[in-house]
Image 1 (cartoon, rainbow, N blue to C red):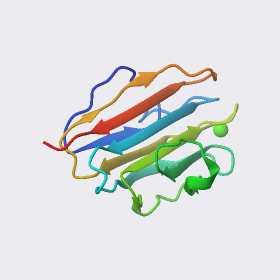
Image 2: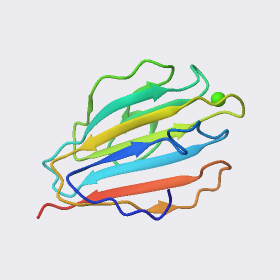
Image 3: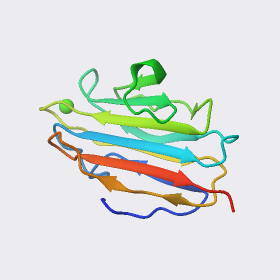
Image 4: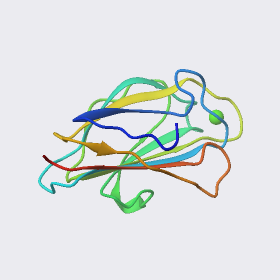
Length: 140
Ligand SMILES: [Ca+2]
């Protein structure tokens, strides 16, 4: 899952191991960026299955992943969320799980009228999946 290039006008983000259960102590960050600042990012969920209250996917506006001031939603449980649209050209996702009980995870597609998307994986200090994806796009 690391060091993967994603290209095209849209792409898929899944929890680690999907469609197999995610790991304990996961800490994954995604930042989706449209280089055209006039664009917004749309995130559509197809599957959602997290341990309610203990494993969460936080979705925020902008590029400062984890910034409490920009949180749009903290998602947990097994209800598939509605479409999420950012208010600007960046959206971040933070997936965190605790140390027990894993479910299936999530699958979402992102779309921002993008012509290309680059995915980069960076190491994280925390234990678990430790993925940081920085997704950038550029209009043709
Ligand atoms: Ca858990």
